[in-house]
Image 1 (cartoon, rainbow, N blue to C red):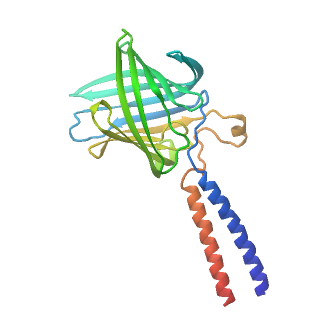
Image 2: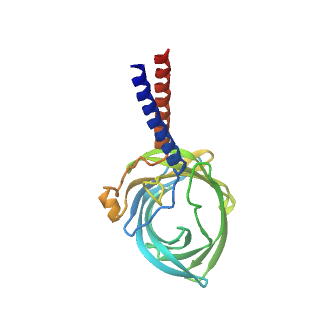
Amino acid sequence: MVRKVKKKVKTLVLCLTVTIMFLISFNASSQFQKPTLKEGDYWFYEFHVLPVENINYSYYGNINVTVKGKTTVNVEGTAYHTITLVENHTVTLIQNGNTGTRNYILTKYLDEKGLSLIMYTKNVTNTGEYFTNYINPPLAYPWPIETGKKWDINYTRKIVEKNGNITLTNYTYKYNCTGTKTITTDAGTFNCYVVEITSSARGYKNRSVRYYSPDVGYQYVKEEEYANGEIWFEINLLSFGHIKTNDETNNNTGENSQKNNTPGFEAYTLITAATSVYIVTTLFKKKQK
């Protein structure tokens, strides 16, 4: 009887050990890989200002981001193969009892290989203002993103107005992926990578935090901006959709899909498996006694 129990326990321990090794390997590759953008992908957001001392205005609105396709752009003699993202912004501003609405469209051009931001245009539809912004060097994320990863971004933005006026502004940003966190918005609940961003643009320091989920893709799930240690502005994902490839259609993945390959799940499974091995081993030792 003891021999049979011993054999069963050995088999179970072996299976659990293999499972743990697989999970360790899987967890080691648990990173936010460079996302894929397909024409028709979209993300819809709401944003608003929170009540904070010394801020005497408020605004709120929506952002609709859509992947429009691919195109080639030429910047100072260099041709870039790009993916085009179009952002429609609707903003309602409240100040001193007055309310006004501002609508503008950002058209962003991302390098197809690394998704770095090369340039974008800003069209303020209700005023006729139009700006072309060139980013030098292109603003890029060092994919893949993972906990503990830090990087700096320095670039110059060249703004060309419709009348030909040119403005140059230098920016320095520090990025730090500090860990993971579960975030819930109207779009769902997501296990997210937390990326803190600090900058000293325009002569003052500011800090923001973005929450990225592999399920949501290129765009973030939520963004928070801080002033004097308090959140004063936030953006929340309301809905999103990804165009399905043939493989995704066969696997029933796609729009607003939730998967358990996001950070946190692997660690939970790994701990569960390790605990099972410990319990089985302990019981076996007791049985021998």
